[in-house]
Length: 401
Image (cartoon, rainbow, N blue to C red):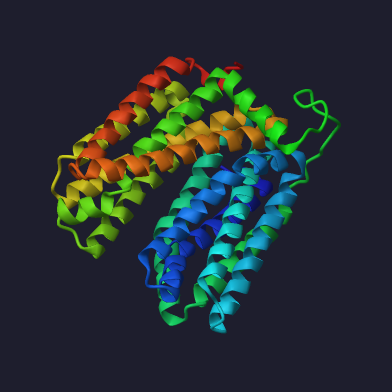
């Protein structure tokens, strides 16, 4: 089914951006390792990236609601490309430094937050409500293919040829994403909205989004489930590489293989979620997906076979994609357009805090047993399923409060 030219432009822009993200996932730590042999400084790059995204989420949500989202998407991607190409030139000329890499990564993280929020906020204006699940599924599939299959090996190969090469590619891809977004329609900004009569300071406007989120049982409930699910996600994945080594007896290649296989489960979820949600409804789909995640992690915690672990991880990622598509589509349907950026941002803050907490807990629990964080992650998803039954109405897509 064709979802129209504007959606194709948004999808293509997202695919180009996600491919750049996949290249960055492998190549940027390699660049850091070429500049320092201190593992703390290499690991700090990812921590800086996560911290920046957390700090800028709320103010970016305000600006996504204030200005034309098409313009934000174009500018954020073009600036990302420019920053990374400038970094590539400095690396090629051998004048690059670790502080410069950190600064570039912080800017890229800020711009990525802006582009992601703008993209999610603009989708409901170009796709009918009844097709949001299908649209989000196609976007999810492109993201999985780019992030998991194409981007990482491409980044590694390019870095092996020339350290600056993957950054040049990333810059070109982000610039292409910005240019593709030119095909999106302009957003008509009218007078003051009923939700926000007069423009206020950024912090106060951000609080308006948080208040709306807290006052809406369905969308607020989805944010709480998302925060708890983020804890459940990072509990196992923060120590999965150690689990694969010690419990599954897998080397680096074997670890990469099980991760690649797990992404196949996500592709299945991307192409089936719309049909399942239409058949049994959002609440049943969400509850079933969360229980599937709980069962897969519980089984993973006791297995010592790599092939079985790969299958269980594929089932787990399938659940994560189904849950993510349903939650995103519901939020897009239920949040007023004038508040969409801020509510997206507030929900994102919950998820980022959950990821940080899950990472910390995973490391602490792994001191006792590497299987323990995975088993506890399964229990967390049982709690998510119970919470979904309690807070979500039978027909969440029609809920107003």
